[in-house]
Image 1: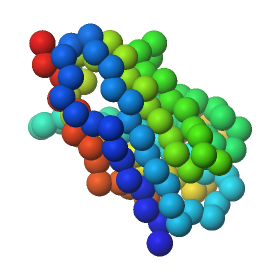
Image 2 (image 1 turned 135 degrees about the vertical axis):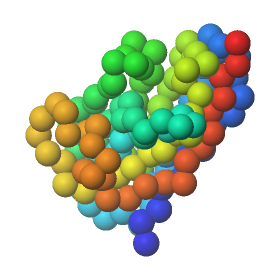
Image 3 (image 1 turned 60 degrees about the vertical axis):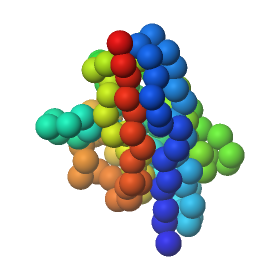
Length: 128
């Protein structure tokens, strides 16, 4: 059974940092991607970053570019999202998701329908 488990969320003051982790288990695919999404109250789920673990291509949304960094470790079974200079507008539930088939291109990763498995989410609250 494929499982994705997020951790590392919490409460942080504006300007602070958090590192989210996404642990992937039960996954036997060699070519896959892990995306990070977030959903703030009353808003749609937003793709913020993605890493294609087979070739280390990375993608970032404009709202987080330059502040967030995605990386993988542990034979690609853990994906991190380092979040720096957090702001109140970053407050949301953060989800990781796995895409089994990885298209080639630069925009597919923001589409929820491209992902096959989802974690339960971790809460991030940024206060000013």
